[in-house]
Image (cartoon, rainbow, N blue to C red):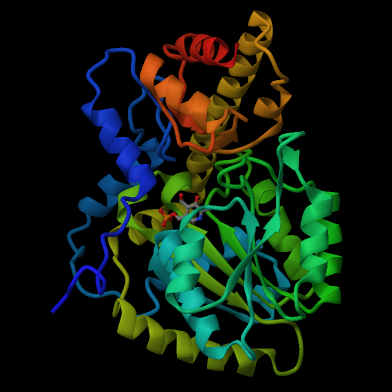
Length: 406
Ligand code: PLP
């Protein structure tokens, strides 16, 4: 009853396929630059010290149980999450026009937002993504039958932002389109607009009555500064935009598998803002109930505990600086090694880009050769996860790149 033309074989997820190939390789100097998860200087996953502490506090609480959370999640967590992204004194919070729902990490937040917009956004808007973007964006919005399109983002010649192309496409999009924006540390390119470019984008979105949907997966992880990485979102809120925000705590807390995330809907200011957000929240509750019933508790308890405790929060900020700082050091080191060797091409983009990833500019052919000859694993588009580099393998990687580029 399910022949191949009804259920064709699906392609393997490219990233998870890459991980499997890396694991199967028994070469001792192999390098994993594929998946976007932080690694310490010994290429090991890092449990944040503040997360360990919070974990011990939770486990020693005799009242801890495994009851269901409410449908919208752990209220102390979602309130702290909203404050974290919007800023404690945000008008969206003081005017009570934000609805926050705990989700299955950032992916779940994107999904809940996409589902809500597919049902309730007036008209049949097209959803615009940067080209390139995190590949899952396409699937998440297509799954809820929303039409998708893209705006130029990455300039192959400068390996920076194609700002003119981006603006043109956003200006040309039909009025009231949905524009998905990476709040910081763009995945996969590591290229973010500057603050003055964000301001121009806000003017453009306003002119066309576009609806921004911010995907924030790296707050604090990009620059090491939580407020700096939230700047664009806060600026758009200040400008009075109505918007969606998908917030992940996977990277900034190292809680990847615990699936801690939050979806925020912010309505614009106005007399009816509170009744609008009340109606929106009521529908989000119904959607959440039918999708996951209620979200997982553990990661939210950890993140909530840390965000609501002054001393733990400070410690978290230090842990963020450790992660962001190590990655920034690796960027500097890689660039200077390539420049010292006189590797053909320019390498300033390695330090200009920010966050977990760098778009190296290596071609697919070079990427495959790196894998074959040097056992270096990275995605075919030339993206490397900076967290996979460390003081033990960076020399080896730089030399391998030098060899493949010549
Ligand atoms: N959005 C972007 C741009 C990402 O890079 C990621 C993770 O890689 C996510 C969202 C969601 O991740 P998660 O569902 O693990 O929070």
